[in-house]
Image (cartoon, rainbow, N blue to C red; front, side, top):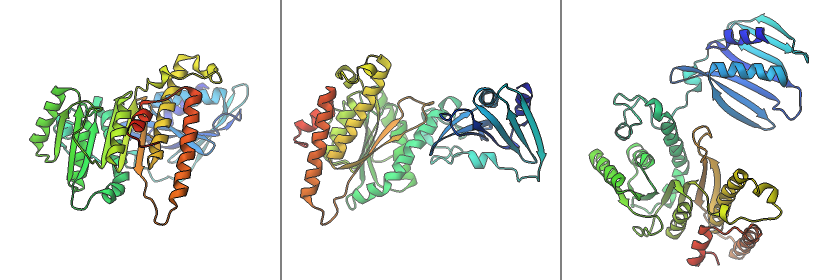
Length: 400
């Protein structure tokens, strides 16, 4: 394998087009693994694509890691490597005993791919443009460069804005004529997202906005209000308070929560339902409540392991929240917020208020809702798992 490793060290560079590992030795392995080069902030990186059935999984890595992984694949699990460069290609075959043969073929020069353009993601908030709140919050330098240690935060902000962009038609449609879009960010913290959402909607899209960021820490709120005043962001304000006891609104169009801890997410969702929010965007965090409740003899082989019980309870929590929102008239999706390498809290609950078509049968809708309520109750009873959102909605007589 030393020759193969040297081949990779020599040719895994900006002139490489692709390296494909194939011809698996076991059926349960991915049928194909492809490596492609790209530039990230001026550094050569490689994206690995794993093809499993109809799905493709991606992971980024540096050159040394890519070389080691390809060699490991060929040593244990795969028989073939096809390496394509701009003016030549290589075919590598590996026998069961680990012997490798390398064939080189010259070919017509292929037009060089523009790595920075081809692989670099176009973000909503452009890195080259100086954005005042990103500078003051330490994400961007005064000349527009993204601070290295804050690059993950920058990607997180832009990913969230993509979700805002996706639901913009629903927000516009649900917005009362002539009235500003009302938004609340519960648990806003340092307010990276609060400022970003306001900036995107008001400055970039020209939409009138009344937006509130709520957090428990008074010093954070004071600082954020000072920044909003500094930028002249009319309609953006920050308040100190608890989500559960917040009564500062009677109608809201969009409710946001990013990593609101444990049952704080439930209180935020309850408020959103009560206000008739058109859209809810929530990234839950620290779902501990059901972990302390859940019991099931059938699932004991899973629940006896602490880490599996914790993850199962977290997934169950979000699944039950989604079902409750569906029963309350929302169309719900649970989506990947950002790569696991950035944060393990990477699921986003997106709920958009459904429109009832003209002429639809209220009896059919009611029957379907009753069935879902009964299925929900049976599941919760079987697992001894009844969460805060269920209790809050029952208290307000919105489910039964």
